[in-house]
Length: 501
Image (cartoon, rainbow, N blue to C red; front, top):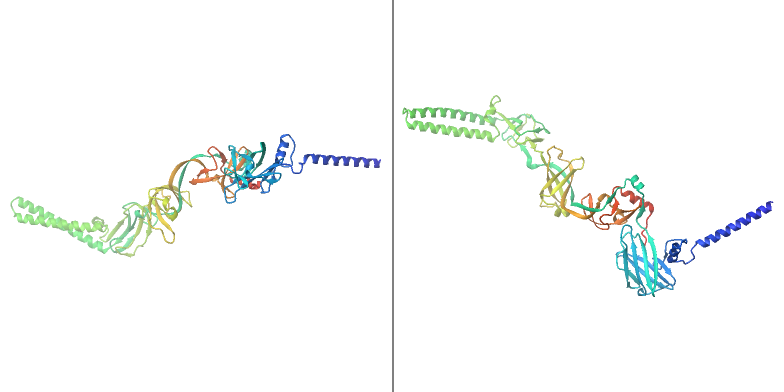
């Protein structure tokens, strides 16, 4: 019984081995099978060992039917990529004039592109550039000795499959290329500073001693507010002179009125009346001169009432912020001592450094967008000044933008980014700046075609930081991956796409 079982098992094993060998022989393409034969087998329902064409002598894709063969290469060493085709018969090179060949190339989302060929050296060269990426389906039609040969192949590059569910989970936004308003300009560093045309350094005009400082640095003052008090002996002398002149004027006026009445009543001589009039005029001039001196030194005669002749009240000439305080109470000051500095901060300057290469983009009167680097403050102003000199060390020219500051959000000392608009133009095709990625040495967006993304190398034009002009590589109406497009690039890296020629 054991012997019979062993024999039966051996028979079953032999039958299995024979069946497996027969299946392998049937399903494996015979040695030297051409891509054309493999394609034909597939069309008839048969299986092929591989869809990848054989390699030719020049490293290209090799197709053969009967005695005739053709090799497809893409040559791009030092030149834009072009198809080069090599012809063979009986495994020997043929002259490029021995056959007429055309090639139809189909890409995702694009119309088929037909390439025609002409002889050059020992090969046929295509009449168009093979744009990147080299990801397409190809159909080759060759005519040789009244016989037509047809082969096809496919290759993919910079392509990745992502379902709609994957897009939602990764936050990839699908946008559509189309017209956009591009505001070209230049972005420069700057700093907020006081408007020096609205700053006043206050001096006492008369020597004396500081008696009071009712306002402190950092406080806002209104025009006319008392901001300092100085006790000055020189002021006392001026006020005494003015008081004396005032009293002499009052006496001269009284005398004049009396002499006028006496003259009109024919009691006194006209000479006495005229002398009194002359004396009154001289007293009036003396009083006006003394009063004018007081005003010139920022004082009025009436201010002495109840406060002493020496008190000089210094008032703010403009409303603004006290930004400097250079003296203290009790300190002796001269006529030129800087007491305080008041700045009107209703407008400020954004001082910017313009690099030499950007000078042709900046002009007085241009609109500028200002954004603080440390806060959320932003605003709009105009270029009010552009320096005529370039610094020897910095190689920059100074410019400034006058910026309204009604709510005081622009604090001097803040660093800002200044974007100056040089030109506005509507372009026919633009994409989001956030969508631009780098693949190899290309600037690309990832076009969306069905469930696939494929890199589209772009030639880019004007850029305003939000949208960028597309000069070539993408057409209006094409969809592409926008926000979070780096996730597409990451998936492409996982796929390990190669540059296949």
